[in-house]
Image (cartoon, rainbow, N blue to C red; front, side, top):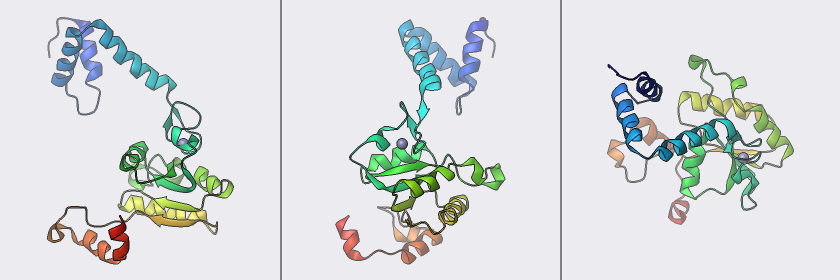
Length: 205
Ligand SMILES: [Zn+2]
């Protein structure tokens, strides 16, 4: 791509560093910004700088937060005895969007994956065990992806909890709502049969 301006070239080059954004798309975005009032670009760059410099992680659950303790941990309307263990903050957002869960979270920051060089020490496991020991947590819900890495991580944490008095559960795995049985893969269908629920429960929800 030939630019007649080094400044424009640099802007396009920086934007194209973002995932999924090629040089052409970057150029389109930069030209769009050029056509907008200057203030719009200021707002964008200010928001990005603020995100970079001021965003914190909750000291209890490691969710993103503007303060020491995130809004969920600080809320008085949450059940502090239940902690849902998730891989990253997107999972917190996804579960919060369901409006079905009133407990707290614990964001691990990944899952154990030797192939990617991620070991248990890279995850926030120790602080989870401390929470169980010191904060009266009664139940841990494992909500990691149903993959080998997710299962490995669940099992590692389960072992770390040792004989602490805490109930552990995993989110149900099965047929997605609206799916036709014949199109479900064998593993999912098999698990759905193994982890069947009393009919009463399915009616209540
Ligand atoms: Zn928190």
